[in-house]
Image (tube, rainbow, N blue to C red):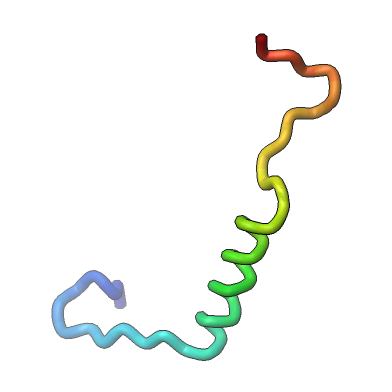
Length: 42
């Protein structure tokens, strides 16, 4: 069942919250995308 359909209850479980927090931490704590050494875009 797709959660975008009418009459479908969205359930945010503890596992969802844990995964979301881990993703948020990883995206905000360290560089996600970096250039390798030697690349000069200027």
